[in-house]
Image (cartoon, rainbow, N blue to C red):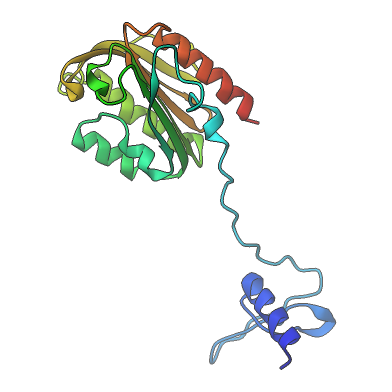
Length: 224
């Protein structure tokens, strides 16, 4: 078989699992020993490979590194699956979030008044977003994060009211047990297949709720 013939055969094998053409140019059917498979007729539909969803430009949703909030400097930022390890969660909650199916992409950026001593900063903020492959999987991830904030044996911050962000979510404040009792406000919400978190000090120059609203507006522009 020529090189051109072999290349064409490989392309066909991706869609019908067979090499060679039947009468009229249609893919020839194959069968195992003792089996019979009807030949595909001209014009018959062929199998198409599944296409993974293209990640959104999540860097445009979080606060960008070159635009730090007033009085703060960049602490760290990044993307990909490591984003799932950036929230100060209890270990079992972190494991549940890691196991949530449908992760597509993530992004985070973190700023502080003191990049060398984040916890002691008089101002700090984390902006965090994850894209899932469906709204159902995004809702599952949101439920995990809300339980973390509201459960008495975790953060214990109570049930918050709807924050008016995205499709569903809330903002709560209290002492963060995972950060040495640091007082802060955390907003957690979902817009379509995106799950977003903004957490920061109650003494930030810009209220955390305002940063969350700005982030939600950027996400709304990004979504179709």
